[in-house]
Length: 121
Image (cartoon, rainbow, N blue to C red):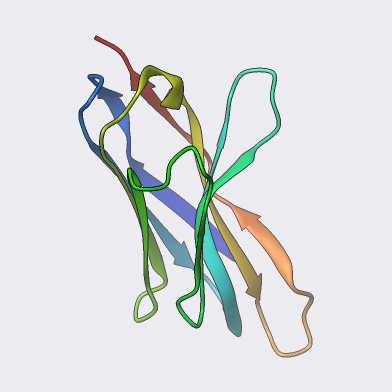
């Protein structure tokens, strides 16, 4: 059973920083990519940033230069460093992984439980 467990988040002031971490546990045959999404009230989840297993990164334009996704292959964790936060970054943040749990298994998206990030003075 694959599980993604998030930690971090909370409240920050505009211009401040926060970090999130996500640990992936369980049976993993192939870890294709890991990253973070966020969801605003009444909206669909949107990609913040991701890192593939070969190190290729992809970021949303709204966070480029402010957010950094770091993947640690040795222990299947992924971090999100958020700097220069803005009130419009307030959302629920979700860890995500694109995995194949075992050799003949399906390639599947897995999600963390979600954590609230609030940017307010």
